[in-house]
Amino acid sequence: MKKAVLVIFDRFTDVDVFLPWDLLNRIKYREPDFTVKLVGTAASHRSSSGIDIATQGSIEECNSADLVFFASGIGTRELIKDDTYLKRFQLDPQKQLICSMCSGALIIAALGHLQGLSATTYPTAFEKLRYYGVEVIEDKHLVTEGNIATAAGCLAAVDLVGWAIEKMYYSKLKEDIIASVLPVGQGQSCIY
Amino acid sequence: MKKAVLVIFDRFTDVDVFLPWDLLNRIKYREPDFTVKLVGTAASHRSSSGIDIATQGSIEECNSADLVFFASGIGTRELIKDDTYLKRFQLDPQKQLICSMCSGALIIAALGHLQGLSATTYPTAFEKLRYYGVEVIEDKHLVTEGNIATAAGCLAAVDLVGWAIEKMYYSKLKEDIIASVLPVGQGQSCIY
Image 1 (tube, each protein chain N blue to C red):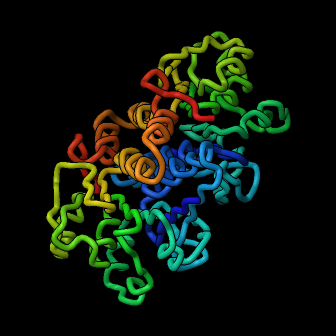
Image 2 (cartoon, helix red, strand yellow):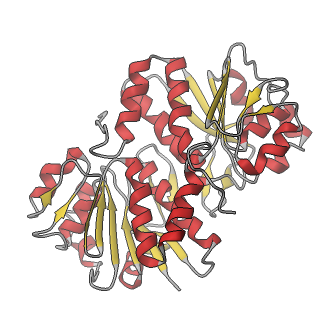
Image 3 (cartoon, rainbow over the protein chains, first blue to last red):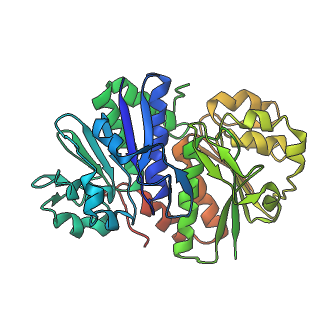
């Protein structure tokens, strides 16, 4: 039984939560034991557009998850300066998959897991990411380093989640889930 | 000042609300007077994945909107049989833009606005859409008929919202918003 958590916070970028969220939930059509939760520091978090989303677990759930997925958004800039927040994470990239969309890479870097490694992020966060000793790849939408994958540009979430699905399960499941969200006439195929 | 409404309901498909929602909210970076609201029949609606989202207005707001955007999801199958629900809409495709993602086309059809016209929808809804006298185009992800546009396959939302932005504003705004969500290295360009 695999468990994923999607880390949200105030001022998250809407699509960078909900596109991965929807894709990850589709795993359940084939693997009913899979669980995915939205986790955060409060009972709910407000998106950049002003939508309130309830969390389903605390940050500590990250420490036992198979996949820890960091959302993005302007809210990351405060979190990376918050030692109390960062100390709640005890991640192990040897045993866990760790993913980020856009500026979510800043949190992985602030936790010390990207030092000396390459990563990508949203262009507005390139400089901040370099501050953590990361080799920023400015022209790739998906950069992987072992069990860590960073993606940039909202629609890159499709390939990022696909990478995580293949790592957790198998390539056919990745292909089927991606096909289920493609435009009709462009390879779209229903999964349910 | 343009106003858009995104119609949600219980058992909506998460990404078919939040991808359009995020894209539409990006209009505000260039057109601060633009408003977009999630509207429905209750104070909140629950998505297919189990997330509760508060509505920001009632169905009647559709009748004065410049853009009425129908989300999709299994919940549409009940709504198209609900006369009380359908009667709350007084849409005018001569004056308003009307869009749907996937099975949202069933609601536009049930309202009588697609009779004798062509449209697209999610493959699982092809037959139901034909029942309303619609010519279903099975291999196109975006079908337009005057001010009505139907799209199918979650990622088709990008082109669908792009169509609506160009109709409401201008093509450069459409291009800038789409560029802002493209994967980095694939034409991505920040809008803020």
